[in-house]
Length: 394
Image (cartoon, rainbow, N blue to C red; front, top):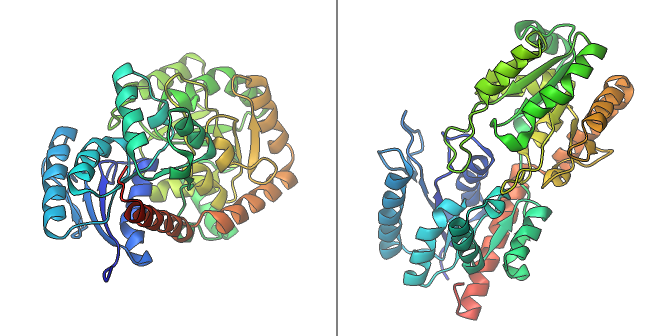
């Protein structure tokens, strides 16, 4: 082969939509060319316009419009330029990729994120198992996700655990003056701050945390404020819950209006400031049938701001939070243990600071995006070589 490996990247989950899958897809589109791959990306509609001239997008929003556009553009690309591999950023792209892989005799790689493998529904699970098992390569975002894949019959040698990464350049060290200015602007001067960030879906356990843990914390620390950055998952295909109003109403019923701040969706720069302002990042995830916390990029972002985490030992969270180095993990469904872990850290500023420092260094050492994208590039290259040598595409 006298040309770089040509990759057709299909990404329904792509900015301007917000989420962990979208972040991974964005970095693959941007980073794989720097690893020597020739990447052609088909992404979702950007209603407000896009400054990505190298990315093909449909003009109309919606999944149906995207699938039709993706099929047409991918077919045209494969007929004219060709590709050695199709990469699907998520399960939504896999049906089109499977059809194209059969027709053009090229392999496809399907990223696994956790909830896509665990999601319920008889028809969905039947199709999902088939698509993952037919993929020539399956990057899993955590070791628990790998176990789920093996449980549905994926061949172990086709699975590779590749954790998500984080933009370390966005999180510089701050001086005290700048940090205090942010505290004044966000009206949290002199207050202890707990932060949760992410889409408001049931498995995050935010409502249960407010009901079962927060009242005791507020009694012990009257200055404490719990900040929730994130809105309802309105763009999700699998999460129908709308929790923002429910959570707000429950906060009022419990008389916690002065101790809870529901921010809704916030810009990335604003969320970054909250990471620095928080004393602890909290993710009290709970077991939900058919759903799972696959990893949690938010833990890495918080760690870069020297904010350690207290979370539940569930799904891929133990891959993101290393007990004793980047935070504390407790068993899900144990509000007393969660309360105790938070209190012990807030009462020990020395331990809290040390944990924040080691959390930041862990991310710098292991989760910078250039290294993560290189792992994807290496794996994609292996899939291409294996497919060429074996004469099989699935």
